[in-house]
Length: 176
Image: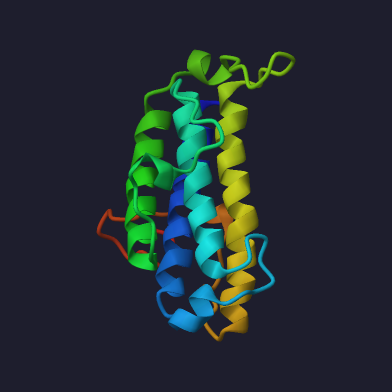
């Protein structure tokens, strides 16, 4: 995978994260925290997990293996949706800057996860996006059940959509 292709996936990931988190702000406190049919038990825990995994894999890729710790074990308070959303926006910028700094050689570099397995860096970064898609899909279903559909979250728009915070309409692709 080349850097431009990976950057398009990361842009989609950032945009879709922002979309889900923006729509989730319309949930009541009860809807946000109640047990639900989500892999991590509630919207709150699912969104915390999503941003924790983004952070931990980026940290791994830059050489800081955080092991079995969580982002909140490292001084980041993610106790409510505004804190999760703000952290996610910051982490998406960190991920973007990191991917922008990589050339094709760095993307292909094998990173040792365990003694018998060393995938290329690009695969780990693609996993971050794919993992996010899993949990955004769960959240989109849950938000829709709560009467708050996030609308389309189409990867096909990845080449034209704006980065969150770039000042354009944040709800969809850039105007052509």
